[in-house]
Length: 65
Image 1: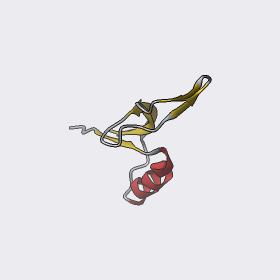
Image 2: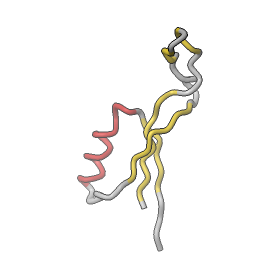
Image 3: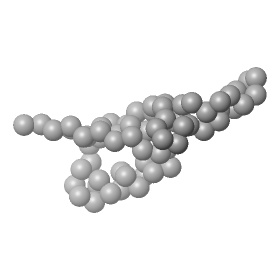
């Protein structure tokens, strides 16, 4: 039976997660850029018309099957 694990992490932690997974023998994974926010409420976004309220922070979704 296959199992699927998903994690949404900060962009700066992708290499740490990939290295940790490789250390335990997991080399196949999918990585997607996603936007959203949790408790932190997101970060302000710089747009062409100035700073926009932070509602969607850039994150990375990692899927392992």
